[in-house]
Length: 122
Image (cartoon, one colour):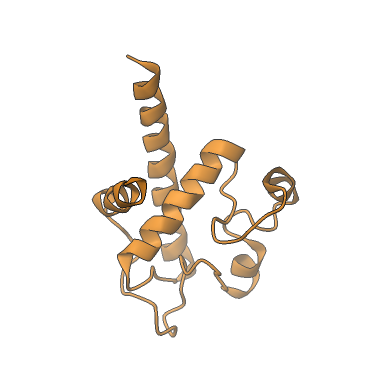
């Protein structure tokens, strides 16, 4: 097995873990994914990338001067403090049912995430 294959496998494992986390958390908090699945896919992909690179699923929808410091502070690690305290998700990953952008799903197909990943890479 080549190093690139090993990296891909690790990337897929982290992506699957973030997908599972998001689905479980949505169900546990009675929140829903965005009605536009590509929004959900991009956020999960971003969380997985940060988990892989930084060791924690730092919110991918914010700008940070120092990502490592933000990870240590833990405020923006998903689920972030605003989400845990007030169900306010800046990324629109976890949306309350009364929000106009809320869909009716608490799961997403891996194929949808991969499709978005590939469209971003090209």
